[in-house]
Length: 239
Image (tube, rainbow, N blue to C red; front, top):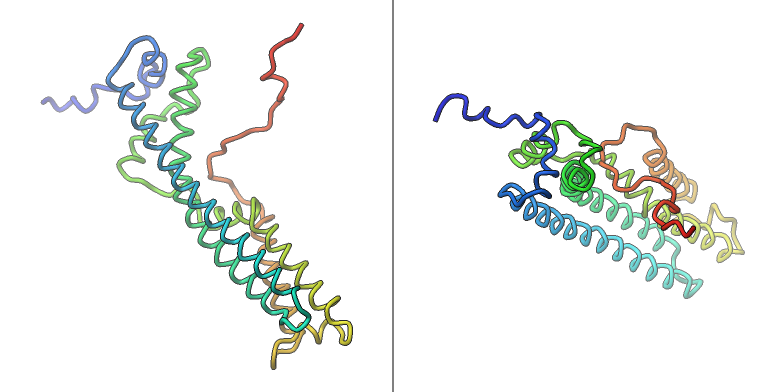
């Protein structure tokens, strides 16, 4: 083999970037390989998506059980809801780690959809990423995480877990106020030798950190799946 064999294919050449047109026009070996690769990436993304859903399901189930028990009797301690906050915080950490793995396969799928299948359906629009074949090849050779843990954490808090934490906070505040009419709510928030001021301060700090993670502006690296658009464009013209 010659020294220039590795340069026989220029992935940036128009005919190599836009192989979607070729896959539609004729059956090619590369087209068959990419179809199998796409199905494999979909299967991996579906598996990791199910793992994310399982974590969320467990979190919701535990919250429902804790709320039921906490309000079933006035004698039940309020700190069971604080334990629930800690459990949810652990779950969001687990889900953030899983989201980073899920995003690897989702990013590959979007790369294929944007540059291969979209090009096959409408070659006139070209491709979104000029070097998409190089990017995908490099990622297959050396798989890398695409988003940071902090971005994944913000995503899962924004989508699911901040609302769940809000439910627990509202339930806890209601529990130490409405269920403790004979003492002020600061004293009612105390746990054993820990005064209520420390407990309230700790809870406030936890939620301030969570809110900061959610709203703090940062550059987004996760590849988006959906964009806002006009839903009427999908409807046929009835006139």
